[in-house]
Image 1: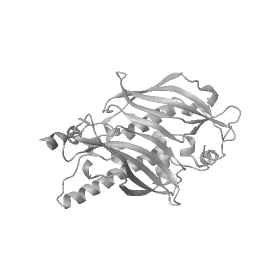
Image 2: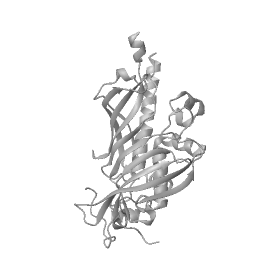
Image 3: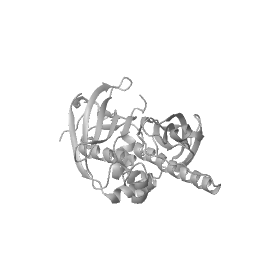
Length: 164
Length: 159
């Protein structure tokens, strides 16, 4: 992870892609989102989605997994160059999550993240708050997922150190 | 139990679902699959993090809530999916061994302009711990079939 000071509004990265299989779509749905249209081909065909489709939570959770793996690769590269690695804090939440098109078995979703806003945290001096727009796009170039998330990221120079 | 339609949801109504016990094993298993940050996998890493001790991924909380409302009322409703989620706020960490409940408040109902066969119901879902403290809030407007039109839902996705 880069430090808060090294981030710029507009920075964008493709974090990875994932191909959704019928088996994992049904297995996720069985555990967390057991709607017939995520579990059964016939029910999917009769649904608004037109065919068996992945739970939107599944699509979003894969973004999270790929984001963590992307940051881990970034950290490994920084360590290999002898550079310090910033800590990632917790996330206060997200907003405006849109499931723009269904994700069907065999679809490959490419995920990306782009920095929308950077501001120092008022309550936690050693930290900045990063707001990002996160997206998923299928193999036909159609957007399937979009949301705005916020997260705390470590600052290189805490404000006290700056003044002293 | 009769299947609920869009017309059966009234603004202001409140219901509760659960409880459900959340185990350390399921927290770690979910994190390994979808949010493999050390603070969701390992006690020592969690102590060194902003969380202070091991806690569930916020996405796990979302998925647990989805399951609890599915069992609680969506399975007994003509639920057609949701176009998205307005807002999720992770207010307090969900720790292993916690017994969670969901409080569902209907905020408003709105007929679809483009598709007369369905309507939206805007909910505030609150994930509560055993003491009643709110761990997470989730605001979302799922779609439900309107009465007498339940056999014909396949008319496209948008709007």
